[in-house]
Image (tube, rainbow, N blue to C red; front, side, top):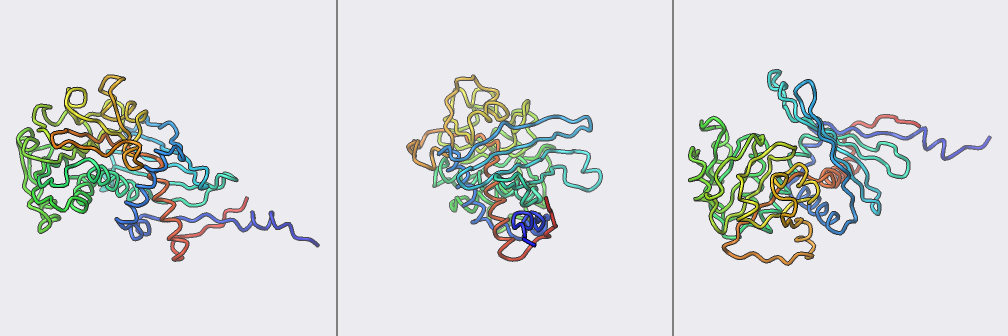
Length: 333
């Protein structure tokens, strides 16, 4: 009797599951930064593809989306299914939910399913950090932060990591009330103080980070002073907005993660179709000269690349296999 090795291999195929605790334990800032930098580089070189984003409102009040892509030369294929379910708060749960799946491009078989919440949080923080490294002035000392949620905090954590001169942080909340918890979290790492006048806080800052649900313009364009850099994080859906009219069109040099995506769901959706935009990956690969005049106002419109999710997920999958982590399920075909 002969053995069909192909049949045997298919029968022994498995699927690795990594839950939120296992993913969080493996995520290290320097590894995430490296993986996200690779994603920007692959995108700039057009070695990796980003497929059209799905982003739809649900009758339940939630928003569901899919970001997917591939890097054929590296055998990397997959997607992230994610969205926002505000009713989760009433159950004590996180409204942002995400799941990442890596797929074998040769067979279409799933290789790994990962909880995507921590991946999304960290890779977005790392993308913001790369924007700060390459666009903000290196002597920036004062930062204005809009938002106090999970993403606002990770953006601040990465900002303090990559801009060592930062010492002063002014944060603003949607209800105008201070948040002692965020002050305690960053105590000793910076001078963090609650602010209530958005325009004054922006005008006094070298770096502005907006990480809110994107309900409308957060400050006036005139408040942004020459030399300021803005990381716009919260606008990732049609209709969302954080930045004021006139800032992108009249005052700033605009950088994006993906030009097509930014025009569809980012801050650039509000600008003229011919607004000049530079993809950050082109800056990292040297296709765009890394010049910044001291008086330039720069904006990084962050909508999130599927390739960021995939390169980080692949890094986690590789580490989990090496360390024997996760739950392997028999997945014959």
